[in-house]
Length: 252
Image (cartoon, rainbow, N blue to C red):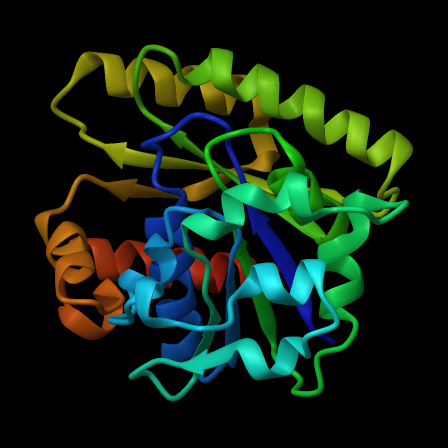
């Protein structure tokens, strides 16, 4: 069965899109089929796969707010195992275009119309807890929370936990926390090790064993429009995301 994973944290710059693309690349290396759904108006998930969101006529917005077939919004990436449904700045107008009586289930209903089966659907959420992120959480089976190893990390985690709890109680009883992923980890920095220790102490088994290091190859891969696992397979960033993929497949 398809696993639907939302990657969410209302704090910007924590590695949500990087994780969506890189984790998809790692799953693809392990012969899993992946659909990335970009729910961020910035459209960076498409850019990170070498596609231009400004050149796409039909995006996730059309599938959410009109009768347009979601299957016709799917675009293929250079990686044969990764497809993507793109977003662009027009997605920011969704609230003005939404007249549905249940606007939190727009994405869930759209996903139900997919005709191709995937091993994983990864939803890249925007840096907010508004309608777009709530749609992702209502559609997902699990939520992965990237946590940047920096000062405001735990404050952001408290906010996303509150939102997840509200969604679980009122809208999606089956939503589970897949895990907290420590990102941009630099073992040379005491703050990074302190944050890591605190997160592992608070969330224990819900924190992934894998830590994503600061790694130039990850940033370079985004520039060249490829998952880091394709761009530079032996880089420490690639190895880390492959480790994360295996951790998820083996029971997270």
